[in-house]
Length: 142
Image 1: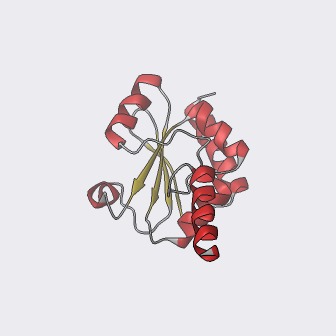
Image 2: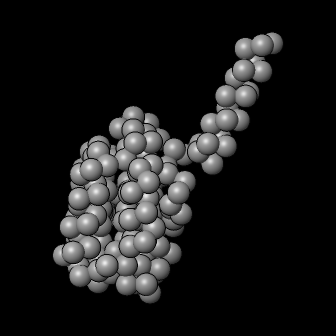
């Protein structure tokens, strides 16, 4: 009985800590509808940040809990990007259209529909921060 209660408490703590079963950083309002996110990106003239993941990918979970959970990364995404998360298993057509060969893949698409950056595999926070800043500079976006 004690193990059961401990398990329930642990599950509850994890759900409260992460907001859902997805480990993606909750400091960022991640869209799950790429069409809606794309419309927002165009209306706000912000780049679309696409994080392609899958439920069975350990490196995706590591990137979610380490890289995307970084306060500096979350601030930059909130202030300058329209973030969307795509599950490659559930949205295979979108992943194929984005030419995703492995997960995690992080893609930045400019508001005028140009591929601004692509990172395949796990990326530490420092590298992602540098790339996000570089894209903004390249696009002339604050």
